[in-house]
Length: 532
Image (cartoon, rainbow, N blue to C red):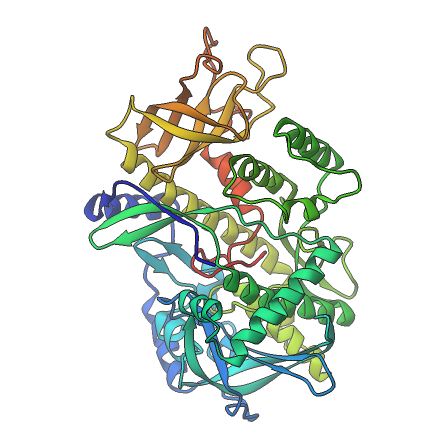
């Protein structure tokens, strides 16, 4: 299936945007270049990593990522088992083989927490000599790895899990677009056909347990020569199948740690009951049929984000998936252990080059599987990691949103007063200027350019197309405001309000809804789908 992409009409000069991206980095206090001493440690480790004795270089592993990616955390080999079922080999880059606990490099990674991806550059968790070099699972390179072996039955359920250290060598660096094209044409090799087969089975198991996968088109900043623009982009099917292998491994890791009574989980609380009631009201308002007894996870699988009313409803479902965090435990299973969006327990273990927590969770799993003591450097840091990672998540979300806001305002800065076609995708029920219970503020999604922003209006038609006028596009504040032009929705004689108040819907509120689902592919906007 081809990727659904909507390209903008205009682009922003690179020089203007680079200055804006520099301002974002300064405002959010993103880390600068690595300290020289940390770089020296990384260079020494790249030349002499701690290589495991076990040799698994005969496994024909492949990586599957965006074409431009070089920080390759994962490589896989899939095969059918004799007697039925499947075997998944999943190699994860062994960052602990390169980083000395307590060293300058280690301390700097704790300060960063994760890799921050911006349109013009990356602010890496690890120096590029490691993340895009010696520690990356690049083709033809012998690397230390945590090698997972997960056996599945014919329905896709896991029946056995092992993880150990081993030397591996990827044989090919595959990308999503070419892989999807080969699958669609029927020319894909066996491992990729099995990826589709296993990925589909895992999606079915996800649906059965009540887990969800949203396909709300995301805004993506793209480079085109010396200019930048925005697109709406929906993941390819192969990205979702690939994500299922990562999710499978994270679930297996969580089970290991819960069994051992020690570890670090990725958790998300169940939504409050009123959130479900609100979603039913939204469905009725949009005239989306929701039969009694059908779960919302089953309902959303039948919706098409290309349909405006469906897109608006899918946007609203993100309100059920908030509060994702990390939970460390040692000596017993925590009260909050589950991940409500996945409807199971889950842990981050598959992106250690780009996310600090994965190095520690992976180390715990290797020790538990071997019946060995967890190294003190890993166990002692577990209680500190939730605060470190949640801070990094917040900053990463801010980076994503501010970069998109910047491109949006630059695309529209000379078009104040113009009218655009738009779809109302979100409303704020907390605003009640007219005391009639009807929302007066919303989020609209333009057809072109690929912009989502606040819109003022009265009784805005959720899920419907309408016309809006651009009232403000401030590059300095990165604020955009539209106003409804249809007389039925225009606000008249509205009292002056404080835009900074807690009830206003702004780009930050929109962003919170977009990001809370944790479908960012290990928090990397280029990496496909992963319900972190």
